[in-house]
Amino acid sequence: MAIAGFDPSAGAGVLADIKTITAFGCYGLAVVTSLTIQNTREVQAAYHQSGGAIKAQLKPLFADFEIAAVKTGMLPTAEAVEEVVSVLSTNTVAHLVVDPVARSSSGYDLIDEDAFAALIKLLIPLASLVTPNWEEAERITGIAVKNEVSAERAARTILALGPRAVLLTGGDVDEVNATDLLVDGFGAVSYRAPKMQSRDTHGTGCTLASAIACLLVRGMTLRDSIPAAKEYIRQAISTAPGLGHGKGPLNHFPPGWKLCAGLGRRTPAVCNLRPKYLTSDT
Image 1 (tube, rainbow, N blue to C red):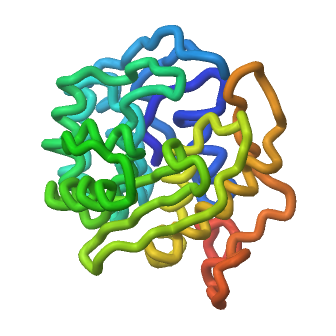
Image 2: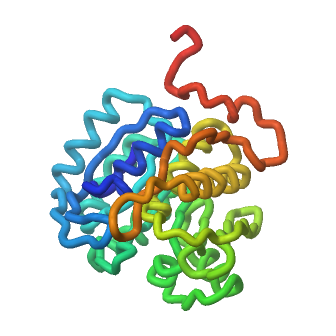
């Protein structure tokens, strides 16, 4: 289940989440928290759903489906955060991936200060994984993130809030490498890949978080899921369709996409992209 905003240009938000979930052979549900008015150039406005409307979307889905994972994105108000936490408190899921979306790449504030405070206090402590970029990590912790040393300090500060793991993504800052830093109960691990020079990067944060959620559902460990998700992002950027006149969308269905490419190990159960929601008799 993706709980996030709706991007009419389909590059980010729940539409990007659903495309990613489908690419990983899972079945996606979507709960819309806000209708954004945007294209590849900018976010112009946002019309937020009330907390009651968000809860009304969530409850029948939990009543009808066995939900393996929840990925949250844009939660624009404190009321939205509170209602999501309220429903999750009575409907536990094995994997909760929180992408603490705060601002669009064009600089538009997507959530208010009260919502961000509620996110830190109420939702992040419940998460299996939190995936902030450097700017979001700075806002959560108050630590200026300028390099890997300060990034680890910030990640450990977020981990102390209660989530099981923190993946601090550095693709927006490092000019040479897309370096992501994982901090969990076992320590810290850096994941580096050459940074791609492309304007078609709209929705990479949403896509990465959704990809990892799917890989966790499919049985891959967190530490193995990150390089697999990064490889997917690389292929999605390299085969992007080049649409729009700003930061264009990814190709969420890159040709020849192979889940286990570059992992250097055999994981046959995970590499099989047969839809997860199908039974053996289907």
